[in-house]
Length: 163
View 1: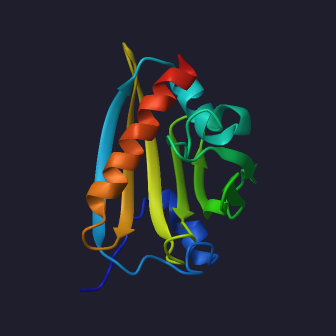
View 2: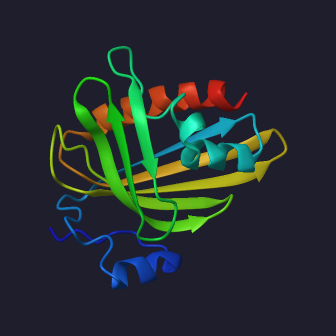
């Protein structure tokens, strides 16, 4: 099966410039998660791109705490999250930045694999805050549940971080 990313037209420039092809998705599994967040879309977007806010929720777990966030917030800019135990927990490049509604990036977790997946975050305001939808594409077979559990746990912390 050939993997065809569900590319938003706004991302095409990043693909054309080669930012997403350094080690693009090899697998065709995809997951999508939506969550209502009782906060403004701008606050939720900032939680993804402000290192101090991101530190409160992104790539945290009971056994792991991210310590260093490098976020070069521009199309093609790299991002890196390092933890205090193992070095780089996650790395990638930004593909699209549409404040405060959309963010797309590649993501790899070097501890587990050098493969880069594609992640798209969409934030839609509603009367009770906003709806956050994450699409994670390029997942290996049988990895969806693990990633779904990880993202859902992080989103629990995200809600606390922006409240």
